[in-house]
Picture 1 (cartoon, one colour):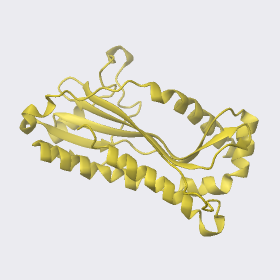
Picture 2: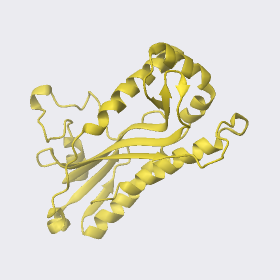
Picture 3: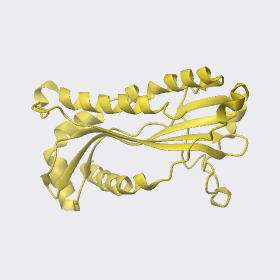
Picture 4: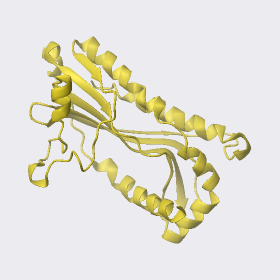
Length: 232
């Protein structure tokens, strides 16, 4: 299990180092001109487990040592829920309705996996890579808004085994609006939120189950939820 966590940590470091380069797609200025004809389905992708992410140069041995030293707080971070971010879907629905459109919140997670991924030859730049036809048929939707968390939990800077900062509450998520008529991406944006610990607090408080860590993670999730409705 520990070896698996180390490999996950290395994988996450590689993923997070390249995720900020994705190009945003702004919603067209005239998108809401015919708002009454739009029905937007809102869905989250199944959330990844919360994790104690690390940035900076670390080898496999460094990762193994860091995992061992911080295993207690990491076990706590793994238990934190994504609920405070997912609560943002109701805010999205409110904005859509205020614009004159119709919104439906999917009762289940959207399946963005190999099972729904389009064949390689059908994937095109600027188009959603997954089959969303079931959403269109089951909900009579014109658009699908998908929110996918890439990583969440905490972020801490390291140089090898030396921590260079305190943990920060962290979330990295993608928001994609898809036109279900042709799978074209109408809007795409990235949300990255980091929340620092207040000065002077004792965050390494295992006896009380790390309340300060929980607070900053929750704050990052709430801030990200607020960003979901920006530029709609």
